[in-house]
Length: 122
Image 1 (tube, rainbow, N blue to C red):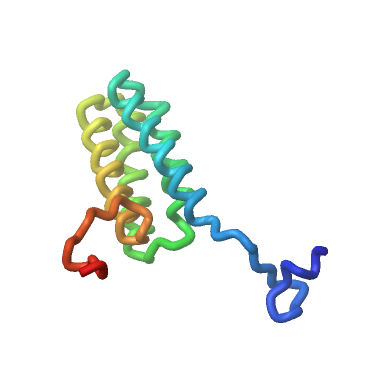
Image 2: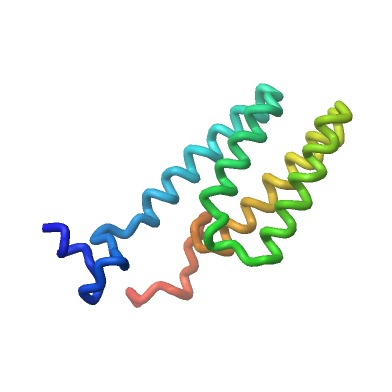
């Protein structure tokens, strides 16, 4: 029944029974794969679209500083694209790529490497 999804009985606040973070991680992984393919093909327009899509996934949990940094990078990408400055465009695209990767890691969605000090099986 639909009321099973309501949190504390409040009809305007719904809580999912499924943790969606794994689906977000899968979507982000596929988008990063697409970005890599675009970089290999030197397809800047498609890379811009994929990086923007990654940002849409990360935006809701981003800090104000992260939002400002992405807006700054987007402005520089747009300026260099309009002036047809190819080297500068690729530079800023790679900067945005690296920054989004860092944001993803800060949000706990990036790769986590094995740390033996966290092993509770001793």
